[in-house]
Length: 407
Image 1: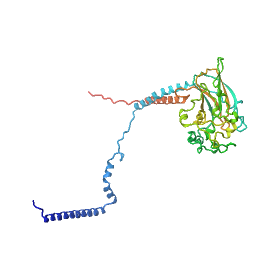
Image 2: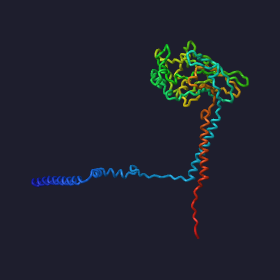
Image 3: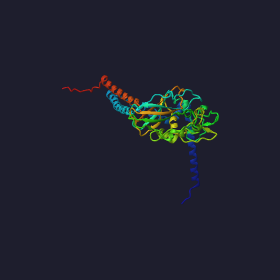
Image 4: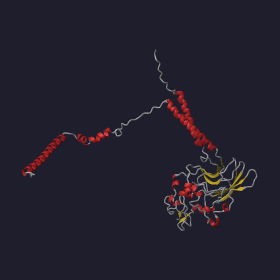
């Protein structure tokens, strides 16, 4: 084997160096030519060359260029008639069923009791005879099958007012922080205004809680056939006085209820009872459930987990509303029966110029009576049916072209 000649190696190295220099000179010359040409082009042309590939992708994209295929639907008269007929076929039966279910609900509203002389409250002041007790007799006009729902009704009471709805402390009601009264505007329902507890934080606080409907009711039935009177609330619980011992008894402890015919165990929504309202405890020297009105009436506000209180705290959307108070679960009512309702009157109506009354009702699978929903369904279905008929009369169906062969 011969060793490579040094001269040969040196020649190759020189060749490689010359080749690299030649390439660099060629590139410099090309770049100089390009720069000369570029100087003659506009800025837009230079930018278009730099972004030409991206622009081509965008130009070819149908979505970005808003050139997507569209379809314009054309409706024939027959197609439109079919749509209206389908609407009529669906809505009219639903409306009939809904209306019949609503009509199956038996409801009777009794005359307002706030103006009855024995029950009436005249002055909204400390010297009023708060808790005046009276008995009012009502005649049952229909047959009622249990369960029968006993409601109180208010008129011209705007629970849906924005300031009223916002005036409550959710964290207090959840028993997360009973001292948090920041959301309970105004100050008159945030702190107590009584002489002995002035400045104490209200528990519960807020306009809704402090305007709690605290009239009390219990009922006795006198059958039309002359049978023995049936007391719906005849236990010792129904004789408790919330004003006993100078108001020392808590309102919730003196509530009137009895099972099964004056039941309050399930009058509030289950979600409210289990999630939104938790039991709370008063903190001595810090919180109180007595404000100025409660001091006048010699009572307290209810506990935060009291179902009467929970029902009241679910605000109504209209100024005339009724709220569930008790449930008669086993005793039917017959036409001609006498219902004697004993009322202990605390809730003053002169401040909002409304009225208080009572009503009893049954329920259907869709809830209480609501004739409007069924009527709306039937009206929409009837209107759709009428429109389909008008299409048939004024817009005749398209005639098919016929071919007549020539012989």
